[in-house]
Length: 182
Image 1 (cartoon, rainbow, N blue to C red):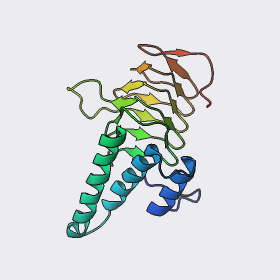
Image 2 (cartoon, rainbow, N blue to C red):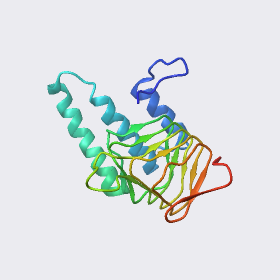
Image 3 (tube, one colour):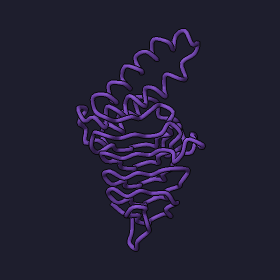
Image 4 (cartoon, helix red, strand yellow):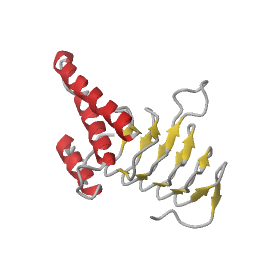
């Protein structure tokens, strides 16, 4: 996802990082902000041409990615389509598949896995809409779609699509009445 303004103009790397910084409470020391900033840098560096100029940037990105993964427990590869102002609320045990899509203003908490369900379909990954609230320890597996304003309860294992505004809880997750607002 290329980040754009309301006028559909690209905002660039620094503009995205400023937005992410504000979304993370203007605290540059938060591991979630650092992981998202490393992701943004990784996406940006792929647009640098020629490859010879990109090589040192790729080394820097790999260092940043591994530091976030190993130190904070947040695995967020640059291939994830990450929306604007996504918040990674807490650190530790967060694994996000490289083919995932996460919409604008979503929140992800500790222990969350967004991944594939089987080795037979390695590229299947969840797609989260805008303003999705993912509770601690939730697992969203396979090519499922989570609608805008949905909420995923703590420790839920989601294997089905969740419509917009719905709440999914349990193992395996089932839909319950109520809105997905934060």
